[in-house]
Image (spheres, rainbow, N blue to C red):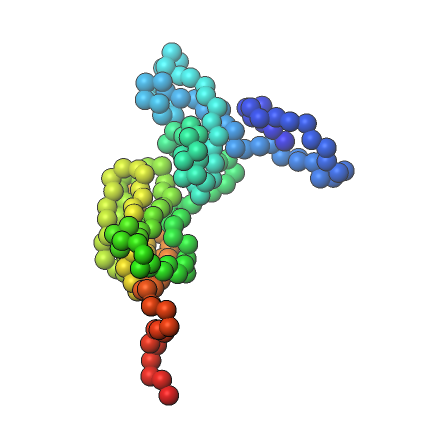
Length: 191
């Protein structure tokens, strides 16, 4: 059911026993420090406080929300009642197989590497096959990587403002070379 801060309300019919019983936690009213556009704290005087309503989504939906042009909640805002994912690779999907194409220039055949990070991430490093690939010091922490044939493993390490390090899960994926029609890739000795 909608919370008092939810701006999108509609009347709905529900079968008996199926109506929502808990309030929406996505729409949240937050106290903002107008000088910094961040969450107000004990040092924010009343004249610089402003109450604003934001759509606060789970970590895995934040990249989507930013692409949709939705207002981004300030650092420190998180979905009530749900633990934040500390660091999660969002792209590519695990075990994806990519195929190089002979009809496209090799330098245009790339995939986007994306990660969801905690709000206080100061630095993010992508690692590919145990080798440092790229480091970023500000969001968005995404990288377009040119495809290279082979079996690959991708991970990321985030350094938080406190100096703590977080490591993501490892994502395995494969990039296949182009094989001319009629030829088959060799996978070992044939009998």
